[in-house]
Length: 198
Image (cartoon, rainbow, N blue to C red; front, side, top):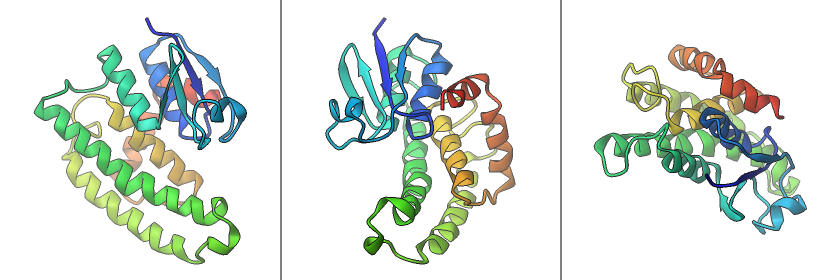
């Protein structure tokens, strides 16, 4: 089995990778540092977290990390080259495009960009977009218990984490289906263990 070291605080997107590692039940080391810490920039000069070291080799970006782990262990993902995997990948990209990017834009205009580069009022537009995107995503779930079908997958980690981020950023979960879904996902023992590391 590979040797895993995850770099990044659980309060960041590193929480997604922590959750996946906990779901898999594999051993790993965790360095719970903030972005731009020396432990991060040594492996990724831009300083973003998470970084997963696999036998010392870095993988960056939370979506890439959790998909790698799912593929490497043959769990929480559909097989590559199947229509089920294509649907999972499509919904994964939808989550990144329509949830993660909206929340990231809001964060950038709240505290990340220099004050002179922030746009006042942009969050009102983003909250509207976030609500519209929820309604669209619920239709794509097509009544399934999980985001991409009838079993837990990488897409669930990304979607549930975005909903967690939304609550922290005061973006309302406007769709009852997603509110119920969020409650189920955050009740998972692996989620609780991962977030406890924050």
